[in-house]
Image (cartoon, rainbow, N blue to C red; front, top):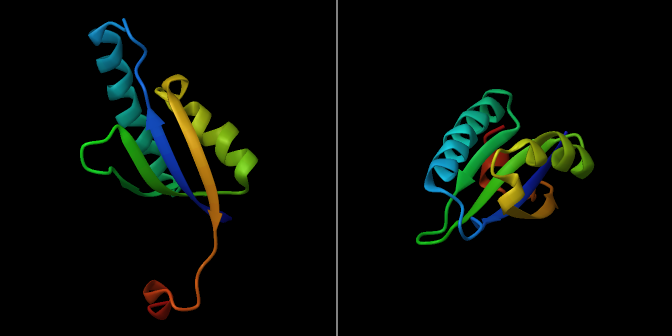
Length: 98
């Protein structure tokens, strides 16, 4: 399995009813919980004051990440994804604890 840092920017289209936004956000939270339980979504951060998220994700490869994970997010039609494959650094503090 490979690890990826994914920057996600969400832009709700103008004129979208609040009820639709609320429905998708609730579904997004449920899907994130599923992906966390499966080990696919490892960490997720939000830069303060932004409608952007930065996450650590695991998938077989980038194509699988996009098709089987990111495109399944309920908010994905409103999202853009910047995907970066990453590998462990020899000086990573977490690697010392393994």
